[in-house]
Structure formats: C-alpha cells, structure tokens
Image (cartoon, rainbow over all chains, first blue to last red; front, side, top):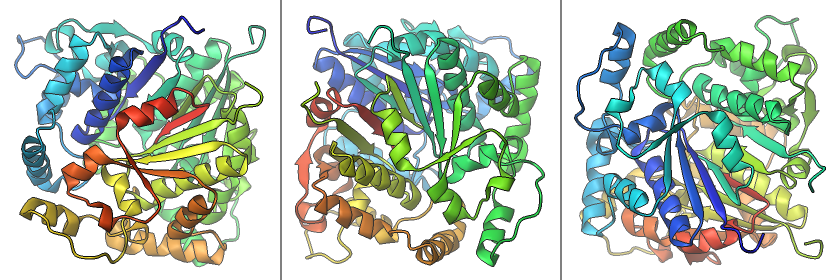
Length: 160
Length: 160
Length: 160
C-alpha cells in the first residue's frame, strides 16, 4: 500500500457553479498532494465540461431543448444558493476577482494540467443528448463500472 | 481483507428523482460488482421508499400535512434541476423511455432483487410522521449507529 | 490499524438546516463511537458557525450584502425542501420539539462537547467576507490542504 499513490474520486452530479468550484478545488488540492484524482461528471455536472461554442451536431427535439436550457460550460453555471436570477453569480465572481481566486474555467484548466482524469458519464450524456463534439477535448468517457473500479480503491470518495 | 466482500454505503438524503436515480444506479452497479451494498434513506430520501397507495394510518395534523406535501413514492419525486413545475420530470422520463433506461421504481426493484439493503432511518421517520405501513415491504429499519457500523467498513461511502 | 482511532471527515458545504442536521447527527454519532471527527465548513456551511450577534466588524459593501443575505447562525438556516417561505422550518422545529429531537444549535453544542473538530474554511471565509469575530468560539481555521490530510486517513468521508 505504501508505495501506491493515494486516490481521490469525485462524482460531480451538481450543475451549480459553487458546488463545481468546491469539487475542482478539492481535486486540484488532492492532485497537488500527489493523489491520483478522477472527477466523474454525471447528470448536470456534465455542463462543467461543455464548450462555450461547438460544432453544430444533429439532435432530436427533446435533446435540443435540454441543450438550450442547460448552461453551456463552466462559466455559465448558476449558484446553489442566493442565485437571485443571476445576480448572485455576478457578485461571487466579482468577489473572487477581488481576492484573486481562480474561476471555475481556470480551475478546470488547472485540473487538466495536473492530469486529473475528467470523465464524462456516457449514460447521462445519452439521456441529456450531449455529444462528444460539445464537450472539452482530452477528457475520458466511461460508465458507472469504471467509476466503481476507481472508487473502491479510493481514499477520498465524494459525491458532490 | 481479500476474502471479504467490498462494501458500498450510501446515505440517500435527497428527495429528488435524479439524485435518487444516481444513488440507485451506483448501488446496483456496486451490487453487480459483488459489493455488499446499503442505502440508508433519511429525511426526504425516505420518499423513495413510500408506497403509492397504503393502508390508512393514524396521524397527527402536522404528520398528515407532511404526508400530503411529500411525494408518494419514487415515481412522484421531482427533479433537483429544471423541474419547471413538473415538465422537467416528464421530459426526463420521456427521454429515459426512448433510451430504454430503467425508471427509478425499476431501479429500486432491481436493488431489492440484488439484495441491496434498503434501510429507512427511524429517527427521521418519526420526525416526518412516516409509518412502516406506508413504506415498501422487505426493507430494514435502523438509526445512525447502524449506518456508521456499516460505513466505517465501507470502501465507497457517499452522501447523496 | 487496530489501536488507531477511526476517522470521520465531513465537508459541510450546504447552508440548509436539514442537511446541517444530518451532518451533525452523523458527526455526533461517530464521536460517540469513538471516531476522531472533523466537520470542515465551507461556502454556505459556514453559516452554521455564525454567531447570532457579534461584535461589529469592518466590511466592504459586497461583504456587507453577503453578511446580510446569509443566515446568521444555525438557528436561522432554511430547509433544502419544503421551505415554503419559512413555514417548513417552523413545522420541522415544531415536530422536533414534540419528539424531543435536538435542534441544530444543540447538535453543534454537543459536537463541541464531544471534541468534534469544527473547522472553518479560510478561503471561503475570505470570499464571503466572514471574519473570525463573527463565528463561534473554539473552532479551527484551515484550508483544503488540512482537509485532505484528514480525509485521506478517513474511514468515513462525506460531502454534505
């Protein structure tokens, strides 16, 4: 056990900016501590991996509706508390800038630089009609079996 | 350790359809992987165990109000995001049907077939005025002590 | 392993009364089971540590707005479900009283008596403009690194 890397595995289910921030701050911290880190993005958490602009893809009507209603990328996500029709996120981002805190898109970029495994859940991609072309490059695609294989060896497992 | 079964223990606190789905998908996956799996239903998560119809039980006024306001069973639960007064759940269920994804009631049934321990938290049953007659058959009843005894041996522990 | 204390580590991210109750009930249970327990309060979870009244502190405008909009202490927090403009919490508290259940402020007090480490996340204190003078006495202050050091040895790690 001692020579093996410690592992942190996070399920990011939430599509909230603040919760995704917490997930990425913990992930980046764990990577800095030399953990092997995986963030498994499922359901609304997939939105953190969406590209702001992407090549047009063919979709059915429901999938188009979902795509339209869901935030297009990390920067567009709302808050879990005090959203106030979008004022909350603006306030938080203003305060973050003042304190030189990293934004969510910057935290995602840092995670990629630190080789955190960013995984998109293929089952919920199907459900929400999201296609690979719409998500960030250099991420992985897997299902619950792969998540469990990682998590059962994990030192820190969180569902966010 | 090698001959012992791995363990997955999930606290299902949330009463949202999508979060409960995630909990049951992970639980069923872990059971398929031969883990010993427990879902400890507490607070709003108890609603996933309610029967759609049940024998009438005697309740105080507040308990009756709670019973009325809370969803009666897995199929009636709302979404954590994009609920839109009930349109979101309809859209999701439509998409799930199209993709042949299992519904939440089917996931619960599969969990019971795979011998996942479905536990109802007795303390919060008291608080919300839920009685055994209102919940599914063949579930267990326990408190936080039993949860912790399971979780401290757990390989994967999640709070959903 | 056998002579070492087991560890439970909870990230309390949520500012909801019911979720904070769940966190503190698990924490107190684990402490009673002789675990070494840490609750790491971050983002809205910090509100559980606010004092109802505190010495006035100097703040910028945004920090004043946050301070005003966020609940002042455990007793003022809302529900994650069925909040109904404040009626839900009243109903829950009424029911809790009837069942002699401990309130959230009592659960926090019990945690302090049982030597649960209550930690305030310094990074999010900065973001939300919360100062030490506004929080409970006898708590600790730390960042994500300290959380991870605890969590990687944890038997039960939860994000609530």
